[in-house]
Image (cartoon, rainbow, N blue to C red; front, side, top):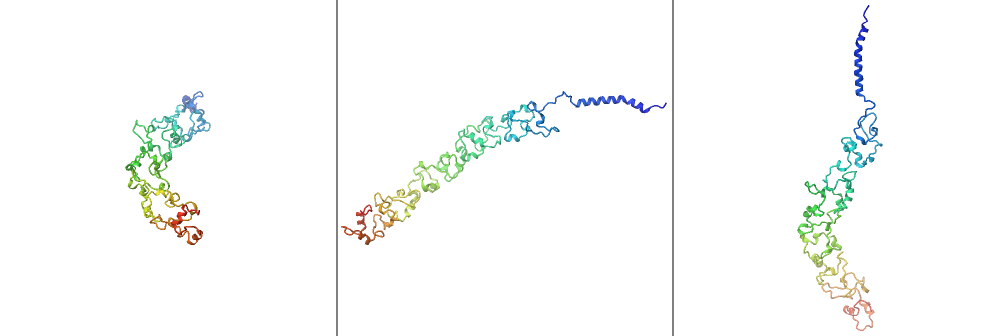
Length: 361
């Protein structure tokens, strides 16, 4: 008989196939988990179903779904926190042990001086949001007013050496921050004059600018009123001399006194107390007290019947002399009104002797 070669070969290979089958099955069982095997959750026990964040066909990218309620886990995601990646607060991706205190994620630049509750001054919108900070400052010794509201914290609270207070116990005196402005001001020179270092006295605590400072002149020998309020300090305080500046009007208004011609104050020997006739609003409209000791011209029949002192006082060299006849009371009409009057004379002095108050009686 002829030997069956293929059959013999197949019989010889059967043990090898059996061995290879066992190896493959063992390998498969090692790779595939059994139905009872549990895969460890890398996020800890704080999360639920994987499908809340992961897609069914891939672990990445992971997205927090609407089903995941972060607020129910004691830390609502608001403002900038809602835009932060999970790993920023959960570096190990174990969500069960994430702290909720601000200082756990945010470096305390205040070095514990203001406590660990950042929300007292900061909002979740941004650490640079100062809306709540201004409110918090209302409870301190220095409420923020004017330009101070928009000033960066570091401007008043500069970085100090370790162990030194940066926020607590800071001085609230203006000069603590504004010594440079005080020392460099030349109009007027605050240091030379000896002005107080309490800037608020002139600049106000709610000032929006250094410009427009108003000195409280009411407590001095010359309270500022009228046109004086609009004058710059050097107009009266020349050469930066403030203490001992004379308060008499003529100290500043000698030229006005000497140059006036209607009437000539010098010729008439008027007193240099300008306030006797002039108000501080303007030189024009001076009102001399003529009605009291002299002839009434602001009241009675002569009110609004004249325009200037020279209408009656023809000579500015002597105001003791006056004229009733020139330009005001013509002789013809005056004579007709005085017919039959004993002692009548068409002379100004005679007019005044009979009509000292200007009335016809």
